[in-house]
Length: 408
Image 1 (cartoon, rainbow, N blue to C red):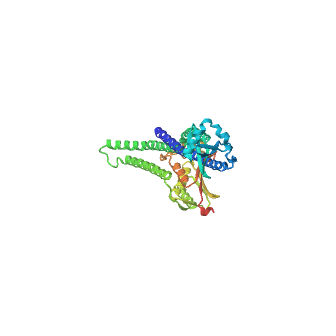
Image 2: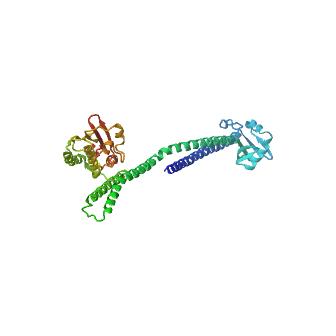
Image 3: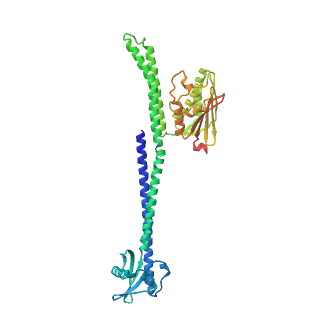
């Protein structure tokens, strides 16, 4: 299990890092491409301005501090525009080689003596005029910008990898919880099945040891086996019901919850009478919800049956249904010992049984009833809670959303 989670965290980390890396690389490419295009456009504009200004021997303001010059080739002699005299002198003896290279290129980019140039030519008055723009600074700008972006990319990828791995623990937590729940469910179910299976095995051993015994002689052993089979059947049904509620979407319809509660109270009243308990009800009519009727009926019966079971000798069970805003509020109360805060935290856990449940003489409680109740409420978009009232008893509260039509 630990290895599976660890592998999932690694895969999650590499997946997130890979996607983030591709997106960042695309953004870097767009940024560098945009800068490159911008510098190209600027170089084109500078060359056009230089060619225009050469006719008047005026250096245009748009050129700014960029190093450039223009010349007219006549025979083998290049005549420079006076406006760019300082730029020409900057290159010293290399200027002749730069001019020769510019003439051979006529238009485009070229390298010479460690410099990067752009050149553009234009026919004017029977002569060819050349404009040369030094783009060495542009190359350095792009390299510096690219180096900065690469450094940022590396740092960002390192940070993303670390964060992705840290957050992968939270991402895989639901899966880990599901595995743990499944593991606990199997362990608890196996534990619950051990006792009835042991009893059945013992009864069969007794019956097999008395080969000449009649059916009547083995009647009590057979009844015991039948009871244990019923127990196991109840356990399997409860587990299937939990699985259905937790893993599938329930089919809902308009249900008169008030009528459901009244019907459940009528059924439980006879049981309460036999036990000597008193059932007190206060049910507000007209509480309509969207629900799966069978499961919602089971919810009410589970809560009433649980309350009656632990109400004590000649105790009282109360059931109150009210409408609060856009929700219905169901309260099921019983007298007897109040549940502690610690037990209230776990009372809805699968296979959890409080001390009172363990002392239950019917020996039929698996600790699944309240887990099914919570799963039912959750599946219907509601909430359920439990708390004790000192010297009075225990209260279960359920809130479920009313059907929209009724809520309006």
